[in-house]
Image (cartoon, rainbow, N blue to C red; front, side):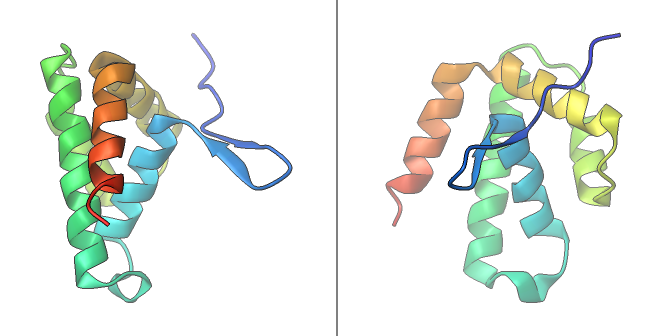
Length: 107
């Protein structure tokens, strides 16, 4: 069994966040305490989360529905982290980069 890589690595200025960590943050924004973000923020997070899951499916990730359900439940487990890493790996760095860039360009 492979250990889950660190999704959040301290860098002295904050954290380096892996794409799977961003996916977890997005899900938290979408599904948890609505007072923590505006409706616009939640909608943008949902759009980005859905884009990552779609890219993962396009890259061959077969457990997208299971992962989406687990993200909605908000219980961060080793299995969830492993699946998030696998999904982002299947999506590939080019697709992830395009998704992140598209959200930055909406400001």
